[in-house]
Structures are given as structure tokens and as C-alpha cells.
Length: 583
Image (cartoon, rainbow, N blue to C red; front, top):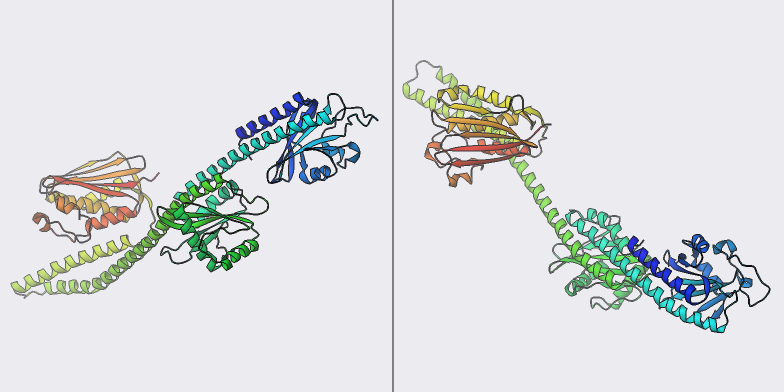
């Protein structure tokens, strides 16, 4: 189907031709039919002269087989075919319109059922249209002089009609090929071959008037024959040697930036033997294909595959416009293949990293559990030793050192278990609405003794009422507890810790600021690394495992949130966490 504008211009051209016949040749009615449905029928497109005839005939279709049968019985008047009423086999109802004339016994008079036609063939002998004239102004069958005048006009009509058809078909080819290319461009965002085929298959087959298509992709090492995907998304049964020939041919064509057509003759590409050419011909016959457009796919200097569009029947030729559009599509699909290949490579890498991360988390959890049991036993025995009344001072000092070491070790094991849990991608995430204001209030209540002992001023800036985020309460509690306790730990006595909550369009923003030690620029780059401890001597003197901020970062990422910070050495630090709001 052509575009409305193109079709209107085409019809106007044919109407002008038909009007010229009625004005210059002496007939009341002239009509032009054009081949439709892949040349299986003729559709009446233009009618000049009679309004009644125009109303009844426009859009009327007649099978080409019936027209050719009638023409075979006609008298040949040069390019004209005259079918006297007595020879006509066509059913009157199939004519669509019969002029209101009184039949005469005079053989020279025009009969209402007389037909005068001019079949219009192209240079390949295809019937492309039909010029029909009816009702001579003098009501007589054309004499030799009038036939000669009409013959000249038929020749002019033929040239004009074929030119109009060629312009229309050219515009249609451009439109369909461009539409196909626009759709193919869209697949550059698709990340799998099956999806690429699904999106562009209809656009390519319709745009290029093909009956089918397939794409062959080459292996990344460039040596294998690759995979073939047809329009159903599955592999097509193409023999291995033909796949290799196709790969070599595609590479040669990509270097030349050209496409090729395979039909009853195989082009000379220099990459196949006579036996292989015969094998290709046999393969085409086996899939009932009479013509193939072979298009290389690539990006930059690399050929990544090939596209094959297929036709059968009489429409074997591929126009220069179609070939150029197909070559452009070869570039578009090449970029899509690069994206799909890159995505697949990254997906495999992510899967491997996720599996490795899961293994690491499980290993840490297992070791931590194994250490926790004997450590509990050690702490229990240390507690028993402390209760013995007659221990010397040095022994009590040793027991106290053992206890401090065991407690520090227990704290490290607890952090490792938390880190393993929040970092394990296999543990299901079950978010629920959590009131972040309530969580902060509970954390401040638990840290009240520490805050009061250091005489820290705590400022809470938050809107009144609950403020819900989407997450796991235990994880959010640990985020708030770690950030606030860190602020308290690294802020000198008498300093200030400010906690603020602010709602955004889709997020809730938590900020924890302090007037503490601050973080040097050298330390900032490693702040979230596991087991990292500050190089600041004042910070090193304070107890810690180096896992707190790593745990916070993992929990925030698990909640699909973001964490950032700003810090000035000797002035203080602000951590900012954004978490999804719960509507």
C-alpha cells in the first residue's frame, strides 16, 4: 500500500492521461486500469468522460487471466485490441458498466458491448495496465485513420503510464526501505538476538517485499560458522559448508561495502567452487526460494554476520534503492549485534561475579560461625577465671587482656556475619514500609549514654510525623546506628551531631553530620573498602573493625539507594543516604 500523498499524485496523473484520450481522440469514455495484487488483477484507477461510468467502475477489479483470455480472441489493430461484441465471452455483469446505446444492425456502428482495449506491457513483457475507450463520438467503429491517431496516443499513454508507475514504485520502495531501516535502528537497544529478530522481522519482510529472512552471526573468535536465526527465532537447517561459504562471502562483501543477489545464477565472488554453487542452488530449491538478497552485517572494519532476504515467483529483481537500503541496514544491524554481544559478555561476567560474591559471603559466614562457637567458650572460661578470689594482680591483668581481645574478636565475627548476609545475592530481599523517623529515635535512645558521656549536642531536623521508606527494618536500623555511632565516636567531647531527614520526589534523604576529626583526601578514596582503617592516628586509636561503612554501603545498595559523603580534615564529615519512599 502506497502512502496517501504518493497514491493521490499517481491517480491524478492517470486521470490526466484518461482525459487526454476523451479530449483528443474522439471517445466519450476512457478508463485506465493498473495491475494490483502482484499482477493478479487489474484495478480501475482513472475514468474520464461519464460520471455514471466513473461511479460504477472506480475500484472495480478484473482478474488478469480473464483479460488475457478476452485479448486472445481480439482483432489486432497495432497496439490496440478490438473485441467485437459477438466474440466476447466475458459475463456482462463482470464488465461493471455498459453504455446506454441502442444496438444497430449496421456492422460499422459501435455496439454497446464492443470492447476497444490497449494492454500496456513493460519492457519485461509484464501486463502493467490497460487503457479502455468506449462510445465513439460519431457512434461508429474506428476507421483506419482514427485507429492510427489512437495508436499514437496509446504509445504516448504507455510511456506516461509506465513512467508514472515507475515513479510510484520508486517512491514506495524508498518509503518501505526507510520505514524498515527506522525500525531496525530501534533494535540497537535490544540485547538478545531473538528479540532483534522479533522486532525487525516484519519490517524487513514487508519493507523489502520478501517472503522470509534469516540472520547468521559469526563466532567471536571469527573461526566458527556461527549461529543462524530465522524469522521464528529458531535456527534454520543450513549445512555447515554453506554457513562457511556465507561467512567468507559476507566478509568479502563487507570489505567492498556491497550486497549481492542470488537467483538462477550465482555471482562470481571467488569464494566457492562449482559444486558449492550447485549446492546453493539446490538449497534454494529445497526451501522454495527463487531469489535471495545477501547482505553483510558489521561495524567498523569487522564483519559480524549476514542478513538474507528471500523471494519467490516472478518478483526476483532487487532495485538499486533496495540494495542501498539493505546495505545501510547492514550497518544498523551490525551495531545491534555489537550491543547484544557486549551485553551477553557483560551478563556472563556479572553472573560469574555474583556467584563469586555469593561464594565469598558463604565462606565468610561459614568461617565466622566456626569461630563463634570456640570464642563463646573462651569468653565463658575467662568469666569463670575472673571469679577466682586468690589470683595475683599480673594474672588478673592477663585475664583482662584475654577478655578484651576475645570481645574485639567477637565484634569482628558479628560484623563478618552481617557483611556476609547483606552481600549474599542469593538471600531474598523483602522490603516493607519502615518509619525512618522511628528508627532514628530508637538508635538515639540506645546511644544516649555515649552521647551524654561525651556531652555531644544532638540536633534532629525532620518533618513532623512518620516518614516511610521501603526496606528491611533490621538493615535500616544498622545503617542509622553505624552512621550515628561513627559520628559520635569521631567527634570530640562537646561537639555536635546533626541528623536531618528530607523528602524528595521519589526518595527520602538522610544526612548525618558531625564536627569531628574529618577524613583526609587520601583516606576518602578507600573509605568503603573492607577492613579499611583511617591513617589518622587519632582515629586509629579508637576501636573498630573497618567493616562498618562497608556494611552500610552494602545495605544501602541492597535497598536500591545511594550513599555519598563530604568531609574536611579537622572540620567534620557528612554522610548522605537516599532511600526509596514508600507510597
